[in-house]
Image (tube, rainbow, N blue to C red):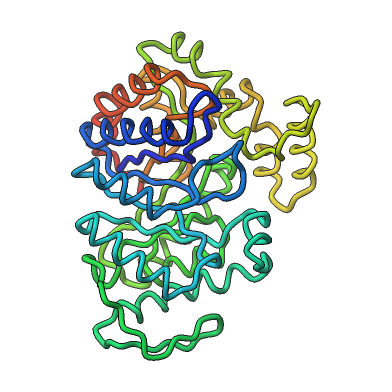
Length: 362
């Protein structure tokens, strides 16, 4: 198995953004020291009460300057928000600045609020995301200058001044549970993954088919399949639950609509739950309705909280059931104090990673 530090870079009301980024670098320096494989960030926009990361390239370069081993990248760039040529240039320079340590996540974007201020159509986001894979390979090809004419992108006679270190491009990722996207990922050698809001029991058959498709294409290496959720480690189960159980139920408060004057958390959570009643994925709908219920999260092992031994057991069982071989842990959530945060990361690196490193779920 492989292990990643994953971060929304949630806002911390008691910190300035600069202080929050400095804390992030301390997290990643410790992960680098402890043998984590990757560090990933999101790309979110326009919510000062939510994520403070709208520039994954800056995240990657800042993290790279402070680490030596970690492979670093976005999870992922919201492709439709960029001009494809500009994004290709940026990816190549980031990979060079990282010395070939870049991992490249690409996503269509799940929030229409990210699109409207840019004057873009949220309904036309999937096609350019998939087409960008072919565009990237043309842009980074040996034939320079290059031209590309697809459904969404058109470029004539452009020369990439700085190529990436990794050829034809950094390893690609697309977090998705969509069957058609998973078929695309298998065909193009792209690593997929999913988040806690999609049930592992529902994901397993889709990823079993993905693995079959991957093998049918003839890729010589195994894919990475990621699973991302909140994790907290402490010396004992009781201490871990005392520190993190309630906080884990507030980890994704940023998913709620921005608070209005006089709003309560409970009303915002209830409104959030209503949006998912009757959706086409009953398992995911149920999780989204209970995302802020600490007892529900613990009962269904949707967050991993406990001693190193307990968390290792939970991840082992979840990987077998949910068919993933990369665990992306969100370690910094809610108002978790930094001393607890850093102890959790250290215990994970010193005890959980060694316990699971040789485990192969598929």
